[in-house]
Image 1 (cartoon, rainbow, N blue to C red):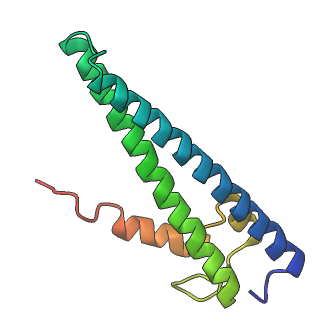
Image 2: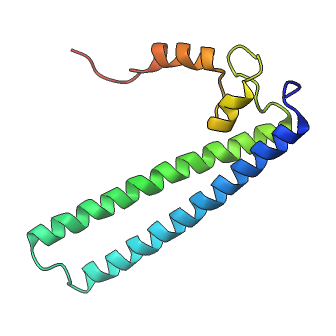
Amino acid sequence: MKHLKHSQIAHLDRALEARGRELREEIRQLLLQSDQQHHRDLAGMVGDMGDESVANMLADLDAAFIDRHVHELREIEAARGRLVAGSYGICVDCRDGIDVKRLEAYPTTVRCARCATVHEKTHAHEGTPTL
C-alpha cells in the first residue's frame, strides 16, 4: 500500500463501507419482499398457473439478486480485510501496486489492469463445456 496515500486509502475505505451498507439494506429489503410473497402464496393468492409461474420467476430473480449482493458483500469484506492487513491495492499476481483510478472504479479488485486482462483471457471459459 506504499503507493497509495493515506487520504486515498481513507477515501477507498469509506467507499467500501458505504457500498457494504447499501448492499446490506438491499438484501434486507429483498428478503422482506420475498417473505411477503411467500405469505401471499401460502394464503392462496396465486390465482392460476400463469400467476404462479410469474410468482416463481420473481422469487427466483430475488434469490439471484440476493446471491449477487452477498457475493459482492463478501468481496467488500475481503477488501477491508486487506486494508487492515496492509495488502490492499497490491496485485495478487505480480505484487505491483494497483492504480488508484482502478481501485476507485473497482475497489474490491485484487489484480492490476494488466494481470486482470491476462487472467480473463486465460480463465474466462473455465468450467464451460465445449464441443
